[in-house]
Length: 374
Image (cartoon, rainbow, N blue to C red; front, side):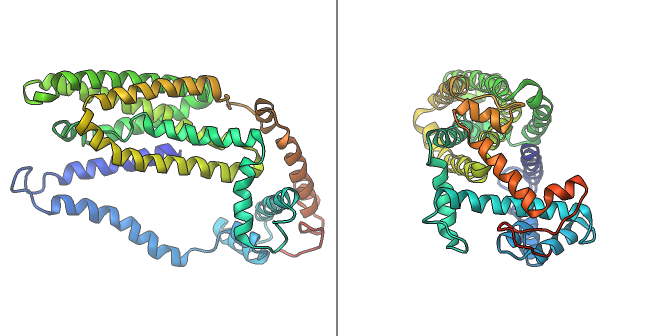
């Protein structure tokens, strides 16, 4: 769904940019509004969001972490449009509370001298990330998340053709292809699995980049007299984009959310996201000079990187389709998830969630066993 939302936004941006490009014509008479209007349009949601944040309630999870349970329940009631004593509100509140207590206890167990009740929030955050590198299996999971996102960006998704061809690509066609391919991914990802989809995707991207590189090597010196070659390059870039949108794009985000146990999932996913955006910046700044100085070699490089990404996925990344947390532990030679699942179940009993789900509602307990009111 994330990939579909991103590609849908990209499609809208392309169509808006393509449409406004004709304001005043495409030559010397083109009006400044041709580029100003897209900026104005994309600024509208940003302004609405900025002002809207002043009216947004605090996150229930934040309130629970601060011990402001009554406010958390009231916020959930407001967001779900249900009374505070509604069973669904109480269940969701106790789920959030259980997870907050679970996170605190995990860190207290592993770093008792550094993480204390009511201690410094920055220490807790730092220890949360340190937890990713505490054991060999945790480090392996974090490394896989970072490397997957490295490959996702260095397969060439943020590269571009030469300036003579860019105008052919800057249309809604690219956006439409990405949206349709993203929908295909939603259908296939749980049927075929993550690894087959990635391998098929990178195979298609690698071949497309190789062909674009060959075409560019032969015709880039004179696109005007080789229009057919230019269009062939455009078609293979579209094929490349389709392969990315159904495979490497969504699969990478799915994988990094499934390889971590409960205690490190949020921080591990953050490591992967950081790698993604860091490599996005590097690619964005390095590709233009690469195209300028090595030309078609840029696309050959991306084709080679796609080959390495296939090798990495095949030999070093486990398949996560249909796997439980315990099964992922076996893959990484760990028993963390079994212990953490037992601890979470114990906490859920303490706060009253287990009893509520089973039909009886005892007095709710907090993480230390003391009674609290919601």
